Image (tube, rainbow, N blue to C red; front, side, top):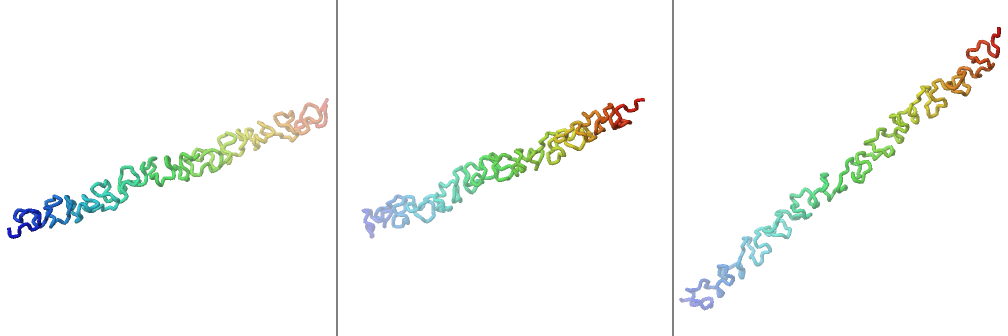
Length: 245
C-alpha cells in the first residue's frame, strides 16, 4: 500500500472504504465525509431542495412552505392557501364560502355572519330592520299611516283612522265616517249629526219637530186654529169652527 493510511484512521488505504475520511462516514449516510455535502446529517437532503435536512425548516417539503403560512407543505392541510382555515371551521379559506364565519351563514340568508347585519334572521322587507326586531316584518314602510296596523295587512292604507265606524269602508272613502249605516234615512245627513234619525224628510215644515214626531208634518204652525185639521190641509185657516153649517 504505497499510500499507507492516508487519512490516519488506522485503516490501510487498500482496506479503507473512505480513504480520505478519518471518521469513515461519520453520519452513517453511506457517503464518505470527504464528498458528503451534508456532514453530520444522516438524512442528507431528503426532499431534494438543495438544503441539508439539519438546516432545512421543511425537511420533507421540497417547496419549503410554498404558501408562506409557516406550515410545511408536508403537514399543511390547506396547500397553496396562506390563510389556511381562517375561521377554524375545518374548511380551507380558498374553499370556504364564508372564510371569516365559522358557522358559515348560520341563518341561511345567503349573507355570511361576518358581514350579516341580521344574524339569526333576515330583513324580509329590506327596511334595514332585522325581521326578529321588526314590528312590521313584511312592511318596508313600517305602518306608514301610524294606525298600529302594518301595511302588509292594513285594509285601509294611508288611513290613520281605518274604518272607524266598522262599515267596511275606509274613513278616507267614507262619506259618513262615523255613521255605520251611512245616512240610513237617505236625507243626505249622516246619522252622526242627523237630529232626525230614520226620518228622510227631517223637519219638513221647519217647526223644530222631526217629521216622524210631527202631528202636522207640513204645517209649521201645527194647526194654528186648533180645529184638529193641519193647516196644510185645512180649507178654513184660522177658523176653529171651519164651516159650521
